[in-house]
Image 1: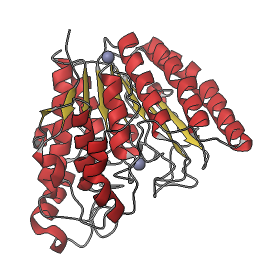
Image 2: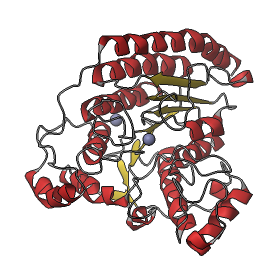
Image 3: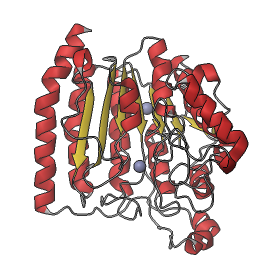
Length: 385
Ligand SMILES: [Zn+2]
Ligand SMILES: [Zn+2]
């Protein structure tokens, strides 16, 4: 029986850095990994750059070449190409190796699970779910969840992908949309209000893979109860229909009430509950095989460390302690204050946030509509093999 989950983190995790004013900051690893260590976690796999052969499972050779070019030239390369340029995905020296290391972390973690060395792995620096085959997008250069899924598909495993980030998991979906052996389910704030502007309920996959793409766009101001109700209403039922061999999940922490980039009202408590739900489904259907990644999350001190911890505790079959360690708050409190993200919470869980009745009803209608549209198609896709 494999022991504690594999934690993926190492020196190269810090290399993925778009600069001091960019919201996706490697500063999150300081308080994040420290809190995990307080819980007894120790990194067991240090990410190293994936090979071009690895990357070509989900990206074009030409795109990898463009990333390499920016990597050498930094901001003095092309002005803008393949989604890289001023704005969300600015070039930086060494960006190919840094992005390839994120991919390598998720791919090697997947391989450890495939070899049966561990049941569960968690890669907090992973979850770069917006990257497309030939284009960077939304802070994402190489799509590590899609690449890990592609690695599992190479061995013929059926993959359930659950995306809990506040943004639509569009890159992972696009890369695997035509493969009926991959079921992608994304819960996110509606594309009417938020980047990347896609992921509507009628985006359900095409051709023989119809029903293996699931999108659940939620209303702005959705709080804990309504969000978790949507996840609980759909994921177990769809997993039971699909019967995956392995589960991959993305645990972006940007659905939080305090997140500066989006408009949902979750707390870390519902994120932790969703992580436990995904964990339990991996045991029920997939022999425990589960790769969890991080994702977005732009409140790097108050939210991201606790969200990661709750995923880790779920994967470790441990209860959630009541209080965050005083030593952790003492160590990071001042830095958090400097970035306007203080005080650090004294508890792991938060009191639940309410959702107003009209918002909750709109989400219920969305969930019912998704279920009615998807379940028959998914059943037919599974029956066809
Ligand atoms: Zn996000
Ligand atoms: Zn377990």
